[in-house]
Image 1 (cartoon, rainbow, N blue to C red):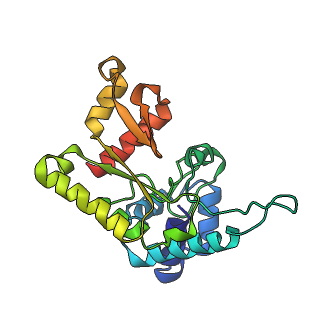
Image 2 (cartoon, one colour; image 1 turned 90 degrees about the vertical axis):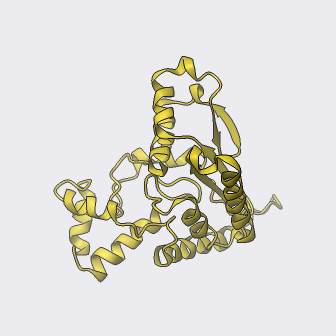
Length: 236
């Protein structure tokens, strides 16, 4: 979210000069009210992290690695020998912090979810799993020993048959060979998940991968189900 926001500021304020920094502040203060046309233009702009776009990926890399170097090795006071280590694992903070995080320059409005782990913002990955993996692995995962998890959503047709399994193996090998750490796959389509939401009795055994563990679909809260549906529909 932060990388996308800074990319939008650079592109629309300084490069294209579509809006001044003062006007952008006004738009954010008003939760984009009165600036809807520009907001939609920015949302549709594919210069977003997760699409193997070098400029925005470089912003993400510089921000994340700067943060990690500031955190790693910091001591927890004088009575403990433990040292802090950086992580890009946000658990549920991408959701819990969204109602208290105002509108952002990437076109996100108050209440919209923030990006999760090292994944792209919801609905902003237009280059598929390969583009997402290439973006994420431009960062140095060794700087994040506490966790560096990537969430990837695949349509069932993408891994069907022998060719599909070969393709999935290729994704895994690419991620690991480029220095990736942890990767979590979910394989589903939006239509099936919407049906599962409407008819939970038919999907008692449907499981979702959540940051290294599996959870039954019917045990997820509604907002969590909506988030996975959005991910699935973005990748269909």
